[in-house]
Length: 424
Image (cartoon, rainbow, N blue to C red; front, top):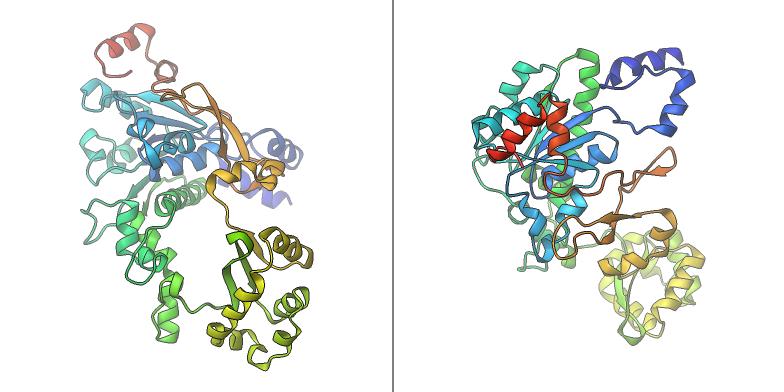
């Protein structure tokens, strides 16, 4: 056991952390978060980069969001972008800096030099213009972890401007999501969010390696490559079977019963039976003995081959049930099922409410600034606890003076920078 703790002391080595030993390990778990003492400076906007920062922030890092003088654009987006800033920027501090100003860029470089991790998600070459790229910053701090979030990893496409929808279209995900001939983007910013998560995973791996070698490194995460990873299962389907994957609405399912059914009063419910034993339970629970003994449906693969004849029969028989009746029945016998829920309905989901999956935040911007709403938390626990909200989504430049003072700027020097509009 002492060997394990010795290794942990070497690997962790974050600023502000105490050496771990058997006596204080459990106390540290109870009273601190795993990245407590780690400083992260993020030069990010929109979703991908802020997601990476949020992962590290929720796990306890001090995450400092560098905003332009006019503020992050996502603070005031309408429609589907209205939730971007409050969701992806909780547990962070905000400082507003004009990087176009010589004094502002110098402030940014000092701030970055104080960091363990720097995050960015701007076009290639942007950070270098201000001396904020990995090459420049690593000369000052060889232990720095620098995480770049781009549209594409270095290669023929790296100069292109990418958006989540762009890579979904070119990376096969939109093709797989929509009906044949009607490519459709997924109903969430899946590549932005997962790209940021992969950036955070890379940062955590680099931090562990830094604890061993003492050296930092650059980590790169990209939207297109993330999207390709998501459709990798369909690529392998083709490589293995020689048959191209059909769009999901028209796919050859791997399971005989795995579909949305329209039932009484036009309600919809997803029902599944993905094994032969589940099929037997399905037939017994619904009193379908003729289907259970029908040899055409004797195995899952046979049911897949007979879906064209089986599903119409099931749709007709299930149409007499309400969704509530099927929910109660499937829950009682342990079969997979799901109501078809809208996002707004999840605020009343009994499981989310009972397990603490939602947390209050105060909106920092817009007409509802200062009002409390609920946001979603990460879908895992640590030591039995959800990672909660320690800092509200910051108002623009809320921590500018505090952070500048921490860098050694006097009150008068901060006032000069503000008067010059180098910071706000």
